[in-house]
Image (cartoon, rainbow, N blue to C red; front, side, top):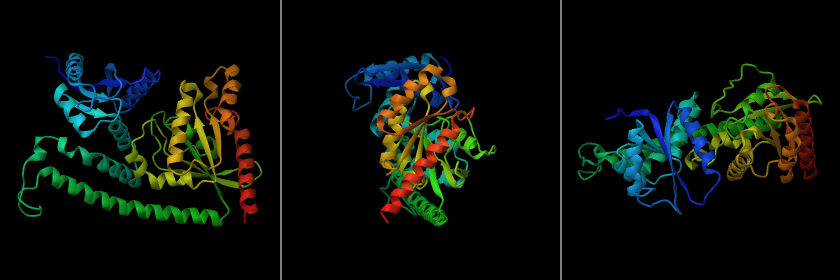
Length: 374
């Protein structure tokens, strides 16, 4: 029998409407797994109108997937979607392998990237919220009746004790994060009193936000990495605009399609920096081949956190990777939304002065409207 490896994964996906985006989504999932040091050994795409309520792909298909994965030496099944606790348990039982879904993969990357105490708290909160519905499926050891000191009685099961433990931890983390939110509010009030405008850099993960902030600020010590979710904590730097006035530019966590709601909720303290900004620069990577969908994802998340009405610039980054003749058509296409669009290369510095001029112009317009309403 072939030895199975937990560093090898077999991907499973549904094509519910003959979507052309399924291959791109699977390519992204392989990239996500690669960021965790896991190799994709095989892929199974099943066409069906909706997920099977019992095991996501049906019992017969699950058994076939399990056999194929084992033949390839994969010790892990990764579903490119969200599983219910029942589906996860059934799929694990039918395949005989460990099972992850897309939200869990993304959370594991966040856990791997977290460096500061604040980021680790927010990840832990998201993970606790995610785990509670899955407690019953964590294994037979979670269903043994208990009793004794500190329990609610002899009939309490271990999963109930674990659930109460998670709920206590959630309350504890929420208190700590609330303190962080209050501190951030005080910092924003101080910036407003000082007359400093704030510009938030947002975008799809790995679109070049951190490279752009490094270019704008001249701070070569800012961490930049060609990997997903390299920024979990907001980095704020002072940047001088063409007219001489300073503004604060904040690099925030990148987004991705199907970002787990628990992560959005847990990172509320961080994402509020975007909602409270005077201006948003949405950094997009048109060289990725799917940047329009990436921009849609970012816009949806911005709307969900209350930042959908913040004035916005679209910075089409990485134009150094494009054929020069394609830049203007892409710019025109992106501008159909009514947003100001500036093609740039954060890496080479192309069009950065133009971007700063547009930032200054839009901040001036925003302040003019505020003064008119006073």
